[in-house]
Image 1 (cartoon, rainbow, N blue to C red):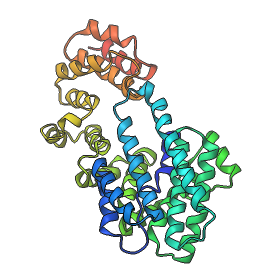
Image 2 (image 1 turned 120 degrees about the horizontal axis):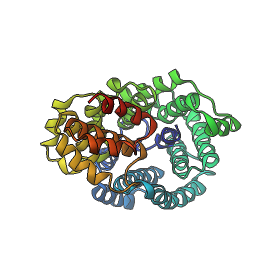
Image 3 (image 1 turned 120 degrees about the vertical axis):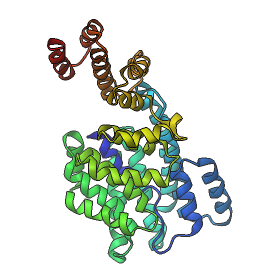
Image 4 (image 1 turned 135 degrees about the vertical axis):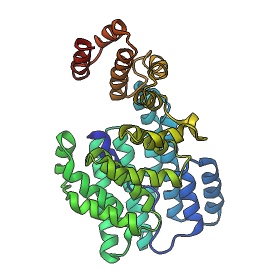
Length: 354
């Protein structure tokens, strides 16, 4: 649950002002979403020389946030947290300086929107470090400012993104995060949250793609509805093909839903080198190429700690099944001793009834 609560504080990313966004704003945002950070920063730098508006501090933070996410993708799991902490501390320091500079100024409605969204980003950065009190405090500050924005202009659609996320997750939290949120007076409504996000996805100026990202996550991980999530993931991947996070997520979803003809086309695409080895191994397992699957799994599983724990455990399970299907019962039995209880019970049935 903690992993998905972090998305609350990612919600203010890459949102434009009310009304028609400039072509420059749109280009900066889309370059970042497509992981073209060099050109995004180049455009930001050129624009900032002419206009030192709060908006461009905000866009800079969003590009840096996406850059940090991409940078962490290939870091071994057991090193990810320390790597993320170091990156996020830099972003926290920078963001707090911006807030200190603007929080006591007389701001326009647009600048209030940006400041509220920057508070949301600050909360996200604290959330990555699991500093929950600071994370929720910043999120609440952002919520208060954005509620003021929509009170003055209910058609300021992009402001509903953070409000939608806070409503959704405040209704779905548990444990220590729910306790901290309750201390700060944060409460929510799941249906209201989803309605706000759907509104932004349909009518947002530049926040529509962010709403697509977040609704994908909610349907897939929280609502446990992969079939509703898939069209959104596919839509985002088609628009931003160089975003390796969504490319791998899309391919993973196809494998999990047994849409194997679709994934075979992806394997022949130009993006093959960006496809996770774990997804390839699972795909080959499902189409019956057990030797190729285990060739990949034996390499992936040789070092514990490189993969996410749930990917590691599932990989061990599928490797045992591969050996069973290849008729190597001795190897399957030996490796099954290292499976967790759930997967061990599943495999035992096949070992007893080969």
